[in-house]
Image 1: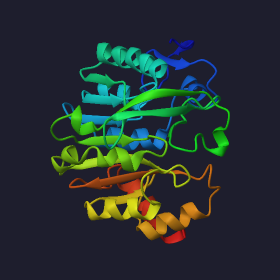
Image 2: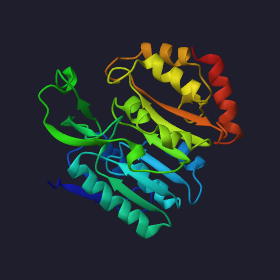
Image 3: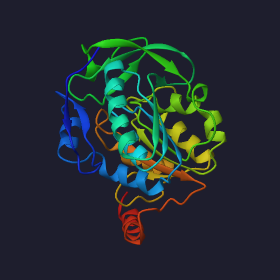
Length: 277
């Protein structure tokens, strides 16, 4: 199955890039020049030529393409066939323009091999969620469902990595459990991860944050000026948001500096740490 697209040239990447026609969120933002600016800045500050990178929940390949352009070896996981097709074309353009490489795996990153149903958001084409048992969540009731393949990262990627982006619309914990071998071989690691209690599967929000801490990660929000936060502080902030729309992006590091955006951002983050609840 193919999907209609339009080709744009976002300033943040400097290459031609396809977006899905009809998307209400990701496509229009990229057409205006960029997407997820704070997360992109944090990723770029951590990348080095030759670094191995994981992009779990790659969608149309925005972060994968940026890492390829930085000279990295990328493994992108995107289970929805027509979206993975667009991702392949976008990273191919990045490979042609840069010095990196990318392998696109048309599977969802999970704890074990298998198949599942995924529900496709009709407006936000970046919000496609693996579902179990009772079916689609209330906010996606009636949306189209397809069957996809699931595979552990450890079955497809071997050896350590330096950076990971994990945005799997609630399957983040399961993705982490399927990459324990990779994590064990990655003592110096930075990651971006969606933290969305409403959609989280396989564990509790607190257990996920506690596990990151037990694995040696320093964790904060992925903002223009991140600062380290305790699990309790993150949970308290998320609890005050709309549960359906209240997810946040986390930034975490272990064995590598947390503050990578310069002195000004570090000072800004320190001030924010004193003001925020």
